[in-house]
Image (cartoon, rainbow, N blue to C red; front, side, top):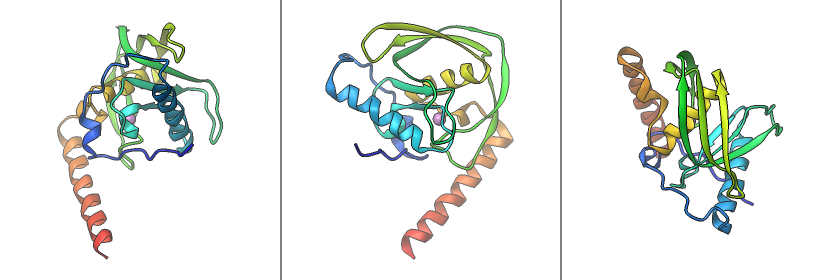
Length: 177
Ligand code: NI
């Protein structure tokens, strides 16, 4: 199976709202889930990935909070995920596989409950604290076309925009060279 490329900002698919999955047992959906795991494990340290990040507008997120470099730990998928409760507040330096080379402090809920379906169509609910809670919120955001930079304010966002413009100029120069 081919490993899909991870879409990089400002790819417009990252701004689209993903659609609910109707038939979880569909072969196509099962294949998308496999491809998402492949794409995540190809990165050195990704612990979460949303389907939009491989260009698929479906409400699917995959996680592995126990992964080590180049190795699987405890992979799981949540289809049609919903954050069902939240508690507390945490500020953490966030990054995103789709926005390489940039990180910033984001305020999130410290604990969350997430509900959705596993790949067999069974209803599941999980709780996450700290980094797991942050990751759940970050990936569900992706499905709604929201990126962590949207939670960053003022000066830091201006720095981000300047950096992105510079990267895009360099990419254009390379493309013409
Ligand atoms: Ni991300």
